[in-house]
Length: 436
Ligand code: UDX
Image (cartoon, rainbow, N blue to C red):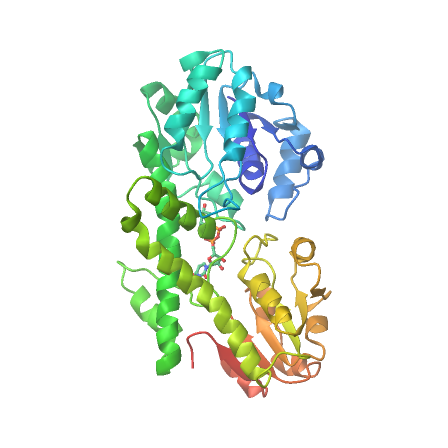
């Protein structure tokens, strides 16, 4: 099939090569010519495992092309909307200006029957509004149909999540739209991927509900971590023990510095805002608490760092290991690690940050922090070392060796995954979140 992908950020670039890998002929459209040029040379403008290889492979064969002209999308049978929906600057709600602009720019080129498929995370009710807008403004009229097919990919696992998703959701208004989407995803469906077919608002809600649930799960265990901190209990053991119950499950119960990134924080806030707009604010009041618990963890790490530094951070050197919001990504949007680094600097510390992939992005948004070329360089002369993003290489650091470069042996494990016994045995004061 001929497929266009509108928006080539973290979601769209991966979706474009994913569609090519599934055998479709793909044109990726983005308003940013620099991004288009980079993608056209077979490189991704961000780090995602295996993405460069697939871009090069399908770029060379011609299966995927990129352009900044919406007119180049005109002949496609299916148009995927993959633009961002960040938090608005003036409140909690989602900023839909990129979605609206994409539909405005695409619609005049839709002069033959086609399916426009939203993948972006949007407030419930958006799809119905866009469907009406398309029918009004596309030359094809109602033959330019709208569907919603939410995306559940995780950064760092985006290719696998796209090619072999754990479920597909088709929000459709007609049997025709369902059959077009069945054709797009034929190989995944033939491979047994579960499919849920719904109406448009249900499909929109599936996505925000999934992210709200994941955020709630993380904040739940982080609330228990707070209780563990005052009782001397061990939150990792609590998570292991309750996680054995299949009704609960162990995944997304890793207590620590909490969630960040371009999705969970803004999605729960947009969900709260939308619930308020439709008169159902009370239903999602608990999500305010989920957000607050999550943000408290950042404060807590800063408090522990100050305690270990002797009560004040003024003039102390703090090494921050990790800047990305999670490992295997260079994404620093709402990164808990960078948030803590910035906080400590404001409290007077000299902060040196090291991240294997995210340094350039981090430097762009926090230019005043020092960025070191390695974990050891970041830690040189440090009074406190903070482990804030769980890159595998940090787990391999030998605490005895690192002890030779620091000023004082204080470490805070913000992700609860260093070997506490090994660090203590090497003479470190080891602190973590929710563990004795
Ligand atoms: C998330 C959803 O998982 C994905 O389905 C959706 O499409 C987009 O949003 P992503 O933002 O890539 O994906 O990251 P995810 O793996 O969900 O992690 C989000 C944050 O939660 C990270 O900061 C991570 O460190 C944190 N996290 C995750 C925890 O603190 N504890 C956990 O147990 C799991």
